[in-house]
Length: 143
Image (cartoon, rainbow, N blue to C red; front, side):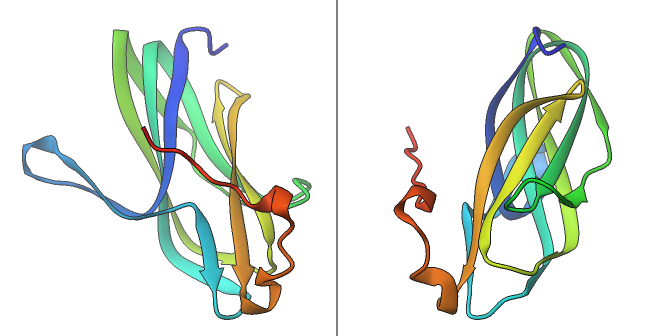
């Protein structure tokens, strides 16, 4: 169950570092991947999740193909521990991930075996850029 756990936000970025004073630095935040030509292989990228809640929970991140039928890659399950009213960050690093085709891939965040969020990740190249349908054009508002 995820009654005592809330995923506040998810960010995709090139790298995450812990700096002096326990400050977190996120490098290269992105929401889409647009390249000259597909397939594309990302040497390294990270999924950064910020959680709020209480208790011990098992989390995992999966990346699915556009049809959601196949798994591209999955993270190792991670246990997060939160004191009552607490918060924590969890980072899943992925190495050498290949996106063979254009499309909207899906970043699934799972807690305690339940999918708590699915984020779209549009992957395209120059040849497919004009083929994106308006429904696939996704914008985000940052407050």
